[in-house]
Image (cartoon, rainbow, N blue to C red; front, side, top):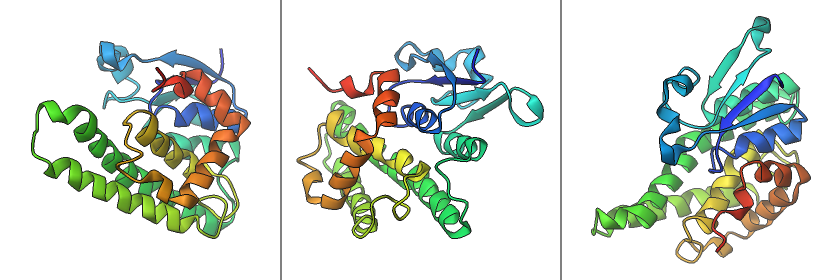
Amino acid sequence: MANIQLYSLGSPNGIKIPVALEEMGLDYDVHTVDILKGEQHSDEFKKINPNAKIPAIVDLAGPGNTSHPIMESGAILLYLAEKSGKLLSKDPIKRSETIQWLFFQASAVGPMFGAFGHFHTYGKDNCDHPYPEARFANETKRLLKIVDDRLQNQTYIIANEYSIADIAIFPWVIWLDVFYKASVQLELSSFIHVTRWLELCKQRPATIRGFDVYGFSEIGKP
């Protein structure tokens, strides 16, 4: 049994963790939490994450050699980076910037992209007013512009160093296209630096292996 027990699914938040684990070279065991069947609400899973959300991990060799459950994708990425010594710069300025962009994803990218996707994909049956989708589409494009500007003169989110900040953000950009089918509405191709960066992230061998864990690359295909 590996020290890291992964509980997740092929969603933009859920896929971050196997991608990071593959980059870090940490051994892990995979557990699929089927949210369509409500498995996230089981008493067993809520002992790991009381909020009943994926992803979550349990580090069987946690602090003090104890079993340590961790919830929230950003917190998991930070924990694993510190544990492995990878994907988080030891330079204090770059480290601070990485954590800032990790929080940017958790507080802005995830909630706003997700809200747009809800009204674009699911909400039409319950809300026929155009305002919610338009409001979150505009906010999604604003956030994409922030990332695009950040990448204008550098390879990755933190200068030229691939980090947990990249892993936190890029699966959500993929999701806008392959799952929400919103690339035209959001004019994704106009964000040329995001497009270039996204291809770099997707082509990394660890990304390909991480995507395969939960079949992320197959989502949205006919």
